[in-house]
Image (cartoon, rainbow, N blue to C red):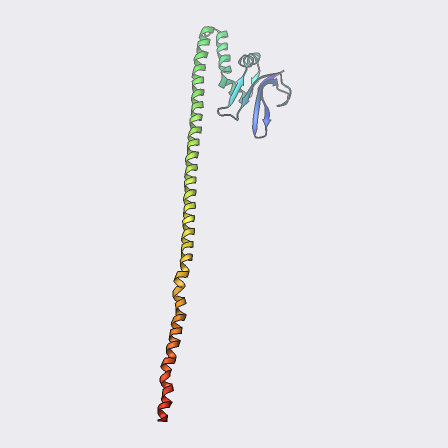
Length: 201
């Protein structure tokens, strides 16, 4: 029976969550498996990997073949490195103590890289938050300025409307001038009435 170490999909649509399993190569992707050896969550940054190191190593020693993605995960966690060093010890290339030292050194370097990546992600998130806050503050300021400009424009429109009746006041004086002119007109006509009186003389 050919055994494969592969991912079994779980989780909801758009947010997958995977189990890392050792399963028969003939079984379905999400079907029956021999052993669950870990989990992989790609939704987090960086992706979360929880792996049973010894179990994964024992399956590799038994001849289980990992899929491409599972191989990348095993390489990332150091399982493939450990298997490689164990092979060197079996061949007599170096002692078990040397293999352990090499593995510890590799794990320290790897953990330093992972921590650096986590810090980079955190700093990126903080800078994005700062940029978002600055943009929000600019938007609020712009909105307040627009609101003030609108209020000033309304005040400017209302002020001339109130002053308009005062400007119309001279138009009301025009009838008074006409009344004066009408009063003066009969006085001017009076000499015309006197003319017939002169004729009688």
